[in-house]
Image (cartoon, rainbow, N blue to C red; front, side):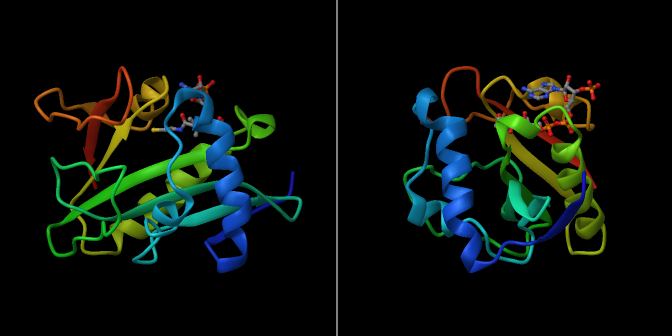
Length: 160
Ligand SMILES: CC(C)(COP(=O)(O)OP(=O)(O)OC[C@H]1O[C@@H](n2cnc3c(N)ncnc32)[C@H](O)[C@@H]1OP(=O)(O)O)[C@@H](O)C(=O)NCCC(=O)NCCS
């Protein structure tokens, strides 16, 4: 499969919103499209294309370790703390298990190594914990996840 990773562009948002909705709507976790779009600042968000079409996305931004963005509010970028928050990673259902999620994550980690970040964190939702654990993220049960991330949400983190 021909794949390419590149920064999110304005024209990608309909595809990103559609992937997000398909992944989370039935779980009651889908975000307002306007708020979702506000999570893509700081040059740390990407899409992966497969055969010229957006097949997945990753949204990340600077944010302090130990805090999780409020899913019902915007304005998330907080620079200068050494923390990078991986807000969301979704691969289209028909492409899952083919390595694209790992590819997007590896791309972010490569970039983050060259940036001002010391640690990357996320809230694992929707049974994705094994995927993150396989990429070196460890649960941080002492960090309380705010309401809104759904049952079984776990804060996870790893050094960079
Ligand atoms: C989680 C997700 C991004 C993984 O992307 P992917 O392209 O399918 O992942 P890859 O093919 O790179 O890697 C899959 C590996 O992770 C493991 N894995 C663990 N939990 C998984 C899960 N919930 N979904 C997919 N793979 C999972 C698989 O067993 C596989 O391991 P293997 O390579 O040893 O067989 C994708 O399944 C997805 O979009 N899920 C829905 C949205 C979601 O839950 N995102 C995370 C929110 S925090």
